Length: 304
Image (cartoon, rainbow, N blue to C red; front, side):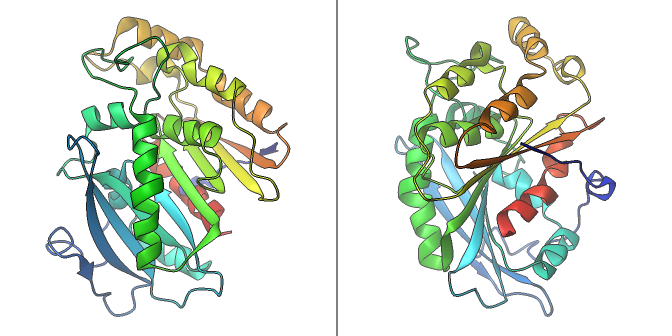
C-alpha cells in the first residue's frame, strides 16, 4: 500500500466561472469552448428505471486531440457539486498534464446535492430488509445501488463513449461520502466496470459497516487488467461531522466507532493481487471540505 500526503495547495477550495457556461450550460446540450479554454462541454439527461429520479450528465471534453487509445475518463458522482468544484484553475492545470474526459453524474436540481435521491442510489441493498432504509435518516429509502450501477453500465457509459473516444483501460469512478460508499460497492461487486476507483471519506459506518461484509465476498478482479484504488480520509474527527439535526443517534455512534475503518480497509485491499492501493490522509480536513480536497489527487489518478 502506498501512503500519500496531500499538497497544501489542494486543501483550499476554489470556485470560479467555468467555461463560460453560466446562463447557457443548463439550457444547451453543447457549449462551444471559449478561446483558449482546454475543454468544451456537452450535457445529456437520463431517468431512473422507475421514473422517480432524473439525472444530469455534464461532459467536459478536452479540446486537445485524443490519444490513439482514446481519452482517459473520470466519472464523478454527486455531479452537481463536483461540476461546481471544477474551476478554471483545476482544469487548466489538468490540461497541462494531459487530456482527460470528465463526466459529472448528478441530478436535475438546482442544488448541489439531491439528498433523498443519493441516499437511495448510493447505498447497497441489505439482505433481509425490504425495503432498505437509509441509516442516517430512516424516513429515506435506500438500497438502490444495484439499480443505479445498472444505469451507469447500460446507459451512462455507453452514451459517453458514443460522444467521445475514451480509453476503456483508463476509466475512473470517484465518489465522496455516500458516493465513496457507492464507488467501493462497485469495486467489490462489479470490478470490471472501471479500472480505477477513488473514494473520499466513504460512509463505511452505514448500516453497521455493512459494506465491510460485501468486501469479504468481493468478486474477483478481472484477469490481466491492472486496477487501482485511491482511498482518502479527512482528519477533522467523526464526532464533529455528525452533529447535523435529524441524524439518527445510533448512526452517529456507529460513525464514531468506525472512524479508523478507511485506513484498515486500505491495508486489506493492498493485499489483493492486481489492485494497486493508495491511502491518502488529509489531516485537519473536515468531511464536507474533503469533497474538494480529494479532487486534485483523483484527477492525477484518472489522467495517469
